[in-house]
Length: 227
Length: 227
DNA sequence: TGCCCCAGGTTGACACCGTCAACCTGACGA
DNA sequence: TCGTCAGGTTGACGGTGTCAACCTGGGGCA
Image (cartoon, rainbow over all chains, first blue to last red; front, top):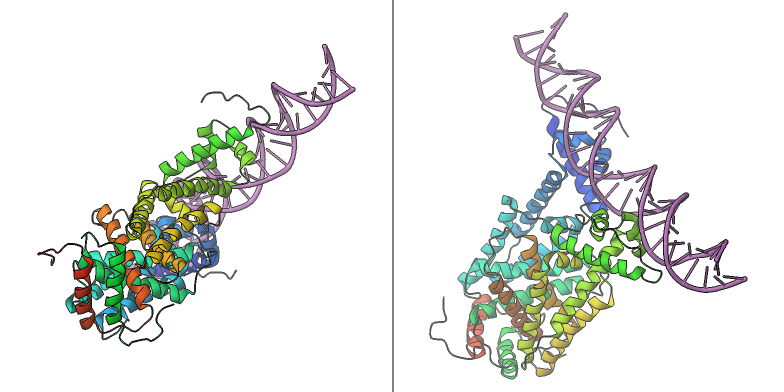
């Protein structure tokens, strides 16, 4: 372990940054929140354990700070999604969300496990809500954008959090599964927003209606669509 | 703390049971997995700490055993769902799942957070898959039942796990939200299973198609359906 | 009847954890 | 030149999971 040169007054923030990086790395390697030790963080930073308390009130606040960075990264990804068609764009946002979660599984896990009430998280939700609002404006979705966003969020979060938490499960191809959930949630929201809580016709008649509607939804006619 | 009478040979299983009950209670009260202490479990059972190791190899195995019981309870609830219409029954199964999760939030959290590969969990999935299969047989859903079940599972799990993990969030009415997610997932699966990965028509045309289809889906005609 | 065995525990200890009070140290302003 | 104070370090405390060693009393067997 290399000798650390003591920081000059005013430069203490540098150590804070190094600690954050070390914690981020350890969290990714260790896997779970409690596997991340203050002692390990301090050792990796090349500093004594209580030094962490110079910059973070306790372990929880350190983890909170790590999470904050993750929210920013997630927002960055969602913001970078582009597509001329609003409904397609909403789908891409969902896939971007899933991509982030699966790329940083541990961070995502920690992120969603603790009650979060910070501006960065709020911003993420607002980005999704804005994409939904565009779909409402285009007429493809109807109803309250916030409510619809919650539904989509639930579906995608459920998808990735299961993939992360149950790696031993015989999942299908990950991209396929994410795609399925994103499309199902989107199409389902479109239908639900028009049906709402109305009692549904029996299954037999539903089948006919779906068959007819989906012939129109598919943009090009496939000759072998049943399987 | 009352004196414990020592168990006779062969009666050791009784203590195992008492420990499980104590752990279950503490988990529900404490909230999180790491708040559940072996010392607390032992104290509540009226026994010394290392006695727990007579019946469970370590803390993890104790928690595993607690989880196993929860899976059984979940299966019991799903099994008790009845409805003549298969699509309606599927929805009720989803609501039963959510009801369990929200009634035992801590157990559910622990349950889903750890990789589970036990028969009880498998049985729960199979029950859901059977309900889906009935819908496929009735024609209201199409495609591979296992895949569809995964999608529904993801949606409902996401819904309840967000409700549990983010109690501070300004959620709408819980029952309403669960209902929304269940219906959205069901309707979405029906549409997705017919559209699959086909490229979709633009949002404008989608809106018209959905409007037309959903007029048929609603069993009775409302005169004020827009809002 | 008396002996011993062993299931069913208990005692005491270990290493590790988060946390904190007390202490050190070197650069900088007066 | 000297005090001050930001930026650390040392050593300790209580709590945790875990384990080796020990106790103990009821039942099988002579």
